Image (tube, rainbow, N blue to C red; front, side, top):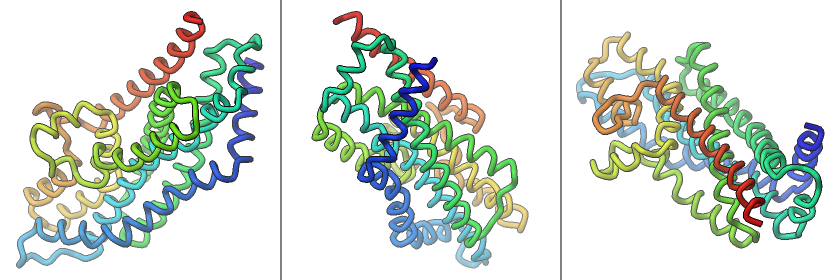
Length: 298
């Protein structure tokens, strides 16, 4: 335990000491928020309005709240994973400069070393994603607030789970990398592609049926849908309360992936929490096992 504690503190200090690594991680949510609010807000707003009959008057505050919920859920869904790939670069830097090799000849177990990297990366990423969540809620409050205390509590729980998933996934992928160039290439691919395959940039419902079935097998899909449910649930309920047709509200929820399906079976928010938690356990365990197996092979 002492070895783990010392390694964790060392990894944390190096992360915050490396200004390039820290600011590149911190700036990602800010850039996404600016891009989403600037370029996608009007697109989402027009899409929502088109879902209701033209002769029907819809409160602008409700539409703004729905747009804000979709924007913030997209931002957090992407940030929880892509920021983890940035904060987890320390492991690759240690491999590149030989520090990792020096650490493996100490009495510290490889499993402890692996978990120290994972825990330090998770802690660093959580600082950024939880901060982004607070900023996102502040942005949502300026557009229209329909969240309950339970919604906010579940939102933070979902952000923590998705961040742990992103950290575990990045740890497994980074395990096979040994240079900064490789890490940069993988980071670019993840940053460019993850938002699409998880439904953050474009709703999964807009894809072909075959692609929807493929993407329904990925944990990230349910991470995005879970955040979207929690941030838009209050707004959708308010729409029904003010008299908007339930069929139109349900169709709107389905359009933005609030009602995902797994091969024809509806997936509840509780099931999404379980899927994310199971994915965290699976990828974290896989990362530790890979480190142990490497030691035995050597």
